[in-house]
Structure formats: C-alpha cells, structure tokens
Length: 361
Image (cartoon, rainbow, N blue to C red; front, side, top):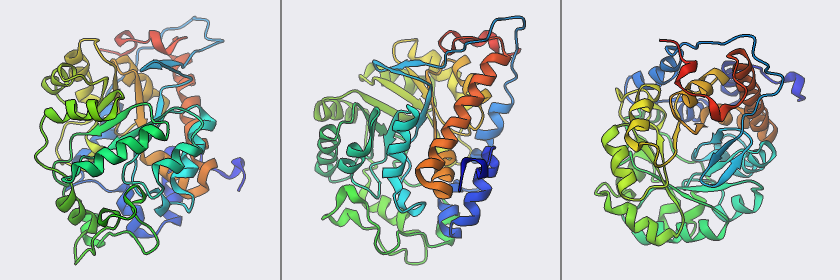
C-alpha cells in the first residue's frame, strides 16, 4: 500500500480500520461507556466553537511549534496512551514509537501495553512519557515507574479518573479479553500480566476491579513525585476545583480528559471543560486536552481556549491497524497539515500566539 492509497479523512481511516479489525477489537477501541453520550459529545462539542478569521495577513510561513515541560515540539499533537496496541498490528507499540519519532510527536506510552516499556524506549527517538495506573500492589506501580525512568521517560502521566471501570457494554457483550500470545508486557512474570477469563462479561472489567486501587486520594501525587523523581502530569481533570488541587499538589501539567467517553457517560465533553480547567490553573502549569479531536481546526480551537497541546488516541490506532508505522505517521501528518491550513485561513502565523480572539462570539 502506498501513500496514494491511504484515506485522507479521519472518518475514512476509521472505516478502513473497521474493515480489517475483528469486531471485538474494533469495538474495544471505538466504544464508550453506557449509551456513549459523552463519546459522541466529545466530537460534536468542538464543532460548536466557530472561528473568526482575519484576512489580508501574510501567512506565507506559519509556525506550529510549542513548548511543553521544557521541550520544544514541532507541533502540538501528542500520541495519547492507548492500551493493547498489538491487537491492532503485530508491531503494536513499537510501530507507534517509531512513528512518533518520525513525525516529531511526543508519545505517552500506556502502562497496559503489549510491548514492555524498555522496548518502547529503545524504539523511541523522540520525547517519551509513561502513563500510569496505580495498582493495589503499589510496589508493582513503583517498579514500572523505575523501569520507565530507565527507559528514557521524561514524565509520568497519572490517570486519575479510573477508580472503577466505566460501563463498557460493547466489551461485555463481546466478552473482551486478550487473545493467547498477548499479555500486559510491563508485568511479565506477575499474575497482573494476564487478563482474567471474561466469564461472560469483560476480562478487562475483572482485571481493573481486582488490580486497580479505588482508594486513591490526592496524597498519591506526592508519593509518585517522590517515587518517580520526574514531573507528574495528571490525566482526567474536568473541573476548576481539581485543576487548582493539581497545582497545589505539585503536578507539572494536567490533561483535560474524560477517557475518550469510556468512563462516566454523561461527563462533560472536553471542549466544554477546557476553559474552566485553564482558569483553574491560572497559568501556573500547562494544560493539554484530548477527546474528539479530529481536524486541524479542533487543535486550533483547543489552543485558543488555552491548551498548550492536544492528544489523539483513536485516530492513530486506526492508522496503526491499516498500515502499521506508516499509517500512524500519515494520520499525524494529515492532522498537522490541516492545522497549518487552519492557521493560515484564520490569519494566524504562530500557534503559540493564538488566543480566544480567533473564536467567534
């Protein structure tokens, strides 16, 4: 398959991926919680933010670079942590890591990866963060953090909105589980490497109920800062109050996220929560956002609302499923190209100078 054969729209990439993936794997990646209201709202909410273009501006050169935790990145598109990538492609997280390097993208590696963080770090040529869930056996989480640091991870991204698993009915209906030959590679040799048999529901539901610690409080941030010796980013912030608490407890950044609509159905779409969180941090730490971002104009809207960078998850998984590393690269390239177009069409020359004036109303 050549680049000329690749889809050119996010919807077409998803449609192509749906053709090549088994139904239960497509549903695992695509599905949300409950009635999937938040899943749909994430996408729709960006479209409700209209843009206010300026004209007769020299846009012969546009600058998409951003600065994030001391890194200068050529663009603001971050590859979000997504689990079990070898379900989509044999090379899984290795292909994604190579694609991130080729496109200048920051990669956040999932702790529930099907390739160990050491191998991901060896494949990565660009900046790498480690996403973390805190297990009931906290020493397992601490061991993973140490491995991540040794593998070259420059920050730890703590997911804070999964005290329990969301009601993912597609996974329950499909009795979702990891097939033979795949495991949670970061816990190889431990019982936690293997998902329980689904038993008529979802093996992932059972795994999270058995292994994730639902009793976490804000004290975990201090524990993680001490354990990791790295900046800690909190993923899953949707309110002004929690944004302020994140700053007070030493977070280096926050990510506005509702877990792609996979946790609390009915949670606020991230495009609507972003402004409140930005106000809550009061400029003291950077804010990232994910959920429903598919077009360059969505990235522009996010930056106009105060985000430093955005994360994408499902879009690059569709690229991975269709064409491995090159598929991930192409999805990122199309989004960054679309961002450059959106900048030019709004009369903006530098992404870092974009603010709310580019939004209508």
